Amino acid sequence: MNYFRDLKVWQKSIALANSIYDSSQRFPKEEIYTLTSQIRRSAVSIPSNIAEGCGRNTNKDFNKFLGIALGSSFELETQLIIALQQSYMEEAQFKDIESELQHIQNMIIKLQSTL
Image (cartoon, rainbow, N blue to C red; front, side, top):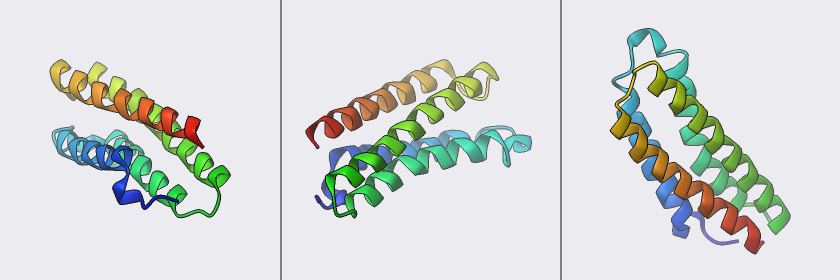
């Protein structure tokens, strides 16, 4: 398997997770154990599953973990929509993050197609 740190999709998903942490710091304090926590866990799950899959011995296993990462990305997208609708983030910020997230989703799908 490729070393995970060399994968552009892993690098971009790490950057996205850091953006999510920065953005979610401005969420209301009452959300710290609910939406804030869920959004952060979903964001961290994407690069974590890419890395874990990279460490597996077969392409089938790698593909499985890429699927989990993709699922986490859609979970994150849903949670970000809720955060936007609750006015926890600005529309421009949401659009920037959403664009990057969709790019990562496409990268995961493309990587899966090569396995």
